Image 1 (cartoon, rainbow, N blue to C red):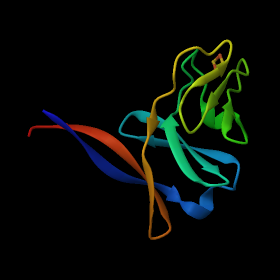
Image 2 (image 1 turned 90 degrees about the vertical axis):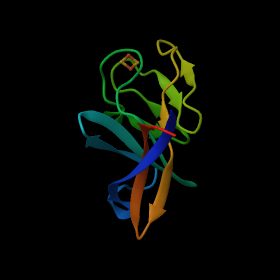
Image 3 (image 1 turned 120 degrees about the vertical axis):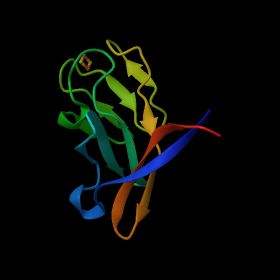
Image 4 (image 1 turned 45 degrees about the vertical axis):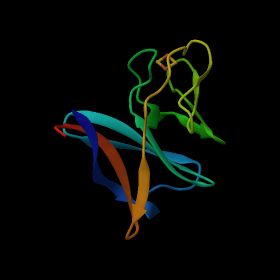
Length: 111
Ligand code: FES
């Protein structure tokens, strides 16, 4: 069993201002797409503390601040940076193609 990536177009690169975040929903899951100074990044959409969507939060440099209790994560590593968040945020690979932001989602496959 291997894990393959399915690349899904989440948005156009121009849809997200620099230092901003956008919600992306796909097949029952929700994600947050970030535009930082040095590129695009993606994570699961829900905060790991409680049920708040990180796309409603604030991008501060390379960090996302949750809108509910103001916990912060490092967008490049997923590391929790301050209480009350203590569980790592799951990240997803991103690539740009033809002006679109593609997010790489894991697909279980047979090898
Ligand atoms: S729900 Fe995100 S910090 Fe509490």
